[in-house]
Image 1 (cartoon, helix red, strand yellow):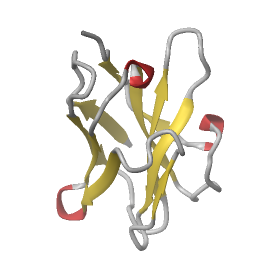
Image 2: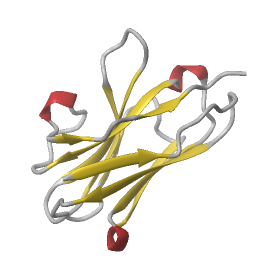
Image 3: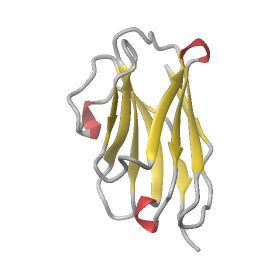
Image 4: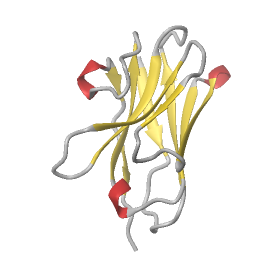
Length: 124
């Protein structure tokens, strides 16, 4: 299984960014694909997830109404559109896969495969 994130970069407060997660070697029938982030000195936290079976979406309370997760099943890509970013959104964003969807909100150690992460600094 390979998980590769892209799309990170410096963004100003109030700006937008779209992250991509390209997945290969994963049977996208009954699992979940999620986005997590880790700020300096803080624990990794779940941001959003989508079930591969029916597209059900989950969000952390802190990003509801600002972030949107979507998928391109044909090309095995999951996106995270992030709008109205604030400095509190700063961190390394990771894409993760779970062969069996954990309950949401989800602890990061319940997920099976991880990408290398992409940096998202939000600063003026």
